[in-house]
View 1 (cartoon, rainbow, N blue to C red):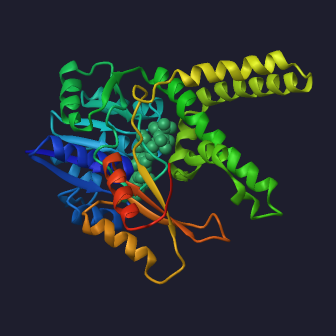
View 2 (view 1 turned 90 degrees about the vertical axis):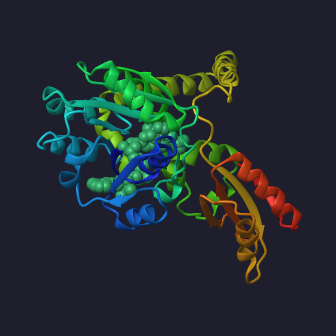
View 3 (view 1 turned 120 degrees about the vertical axis):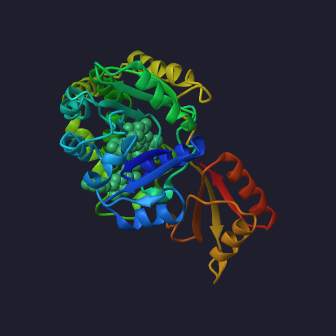
Amino acid sequence: MTTVIIEGLGLIGGSLALALKQEVADTYLIGLDQNLSSLRFAKQAGIIDEIGTGLAAVAPQADVIILATPVEKIAASLRLLATLTLKPNVIITDTGSTKQVVMAAAAPLLTQGVTVIGGHPMAGSHKSGVHAANADLFRSAYYFLVPGQQTAPLQVARLQRLLAGTNAKFLQVEPTEHDHIVGMLSHVPHMLAATLVNETTQQFKDSPTALRLAAGGFRDMTRIASSDPQMWADILLTNTAPIQQILHRYIGDLTDLEQAMTARDQTALLDFFNQAKVTRDAINPQKAGAIPGFFDVFVDIPDRTGAIAEVTTILAQAEIQLVNIQVLETREELNGILQITFASEAAQQQAQQLLAAQQINILRRA
Ligand SMILES: NC(=O)c1ccc[n+]([C@@H]2O[C@H](COP(=O)([O-])OP(=O)(O)OC[C@H]3O[C@@H](n4cnc5c(N)ncnc54)[C@H](O)[C@@H]3O)[C@@H](O)[C@H]2O)c1
Ligand SMILES: O=C(O)C(=O)C[C@]1(C(=O)O)C=C[C@@H](O)C=C1
């Protein structure tokens, strides 16, 4: 029996719990979270076996401890763990999006000879919480591992075996290299997306319906602005210097672009967009990082009682599991739009076929 504690049963902790259970049959999972209703849901859904009473109380019985809360809390938990007596062979890992602060907080544990291997699956979503957990979330994604300097390769191999159910591709990196890479590929893009949304809202503050005109470009650029605010505040506060460096380059790039436009420099403008297009077109979606974690279907909901229930009944009768369901109010003059999210492309396609067969109007696929 392998006793695994997961602190932070949200999107990532919940998804890891599902993947672990799939891979290691005799895993006993204890969940910890500040949100009691998430814990209750996780227990009821069989994602965890037990609701823990607190990290200090349950950590001494753990073979593996996974910290999957926002980063500042991960660091605090590592400091707490250093004051406890743990099993000699315990592996402590985390899922935090930054690694220098996490590994610095792990220093007292590493000095005691405890195995701490920082972790960061490069897959996720703008959706948060245990209800969005998905065993397949990490399939084909890169999964950074950041072992302590003295960590035995055998322990790293043990952790990789435990996490094999994620079907992720493991990659070992140094904390500084990690934070620079994700600053560029993840943190600054999230800052730009949120800035785009906030600036647009500000510009349109006197015409609140203008945002409803947002089409593909704005939507494609801003999906990730719906991510969890606490998670992103912690990321910026724990990766400040690398992000500052990257932002300065962006400011320079945007200034150059503005100058080329002002100077009517068509060659410079063409070069700029051409370079981006060639690079972007060369990214093969089959090979790049993770496959998308979620699959949406959008349907028109006629304005009559029971219309939503008709749709959900069709899906329930076919035993198709939903990750999320919400009514979008983007087109006030028309019917409502129901956005239904599935965990796999197969479920998405099956749902589309079933709904279309019942003459339900499917709008588009995201
Ligand atoms: N969302 C992503 O795309 C993604 C991807 C990879 C890594 N991460 C990292 O993984 C971690 C978890 O992210 P997530 O997307 O699962 O977030 P989430 O919001 O879905 O889940 C976080 C969970 O931690 C709990 N929590 C927060 N503060 C707590 C505290 N003080 N004590 C106990 N529980 C607490 C919350 O209740 C929630 O259930 C973060 O460190 C994040 O940076 C996120
Ligand atoms: O797909 C998304 O919604 C994500 O934001 C996932 C994403 C990313 O930026 O790629 C977000 C933060 C994580 O640390 C890793 C992955």
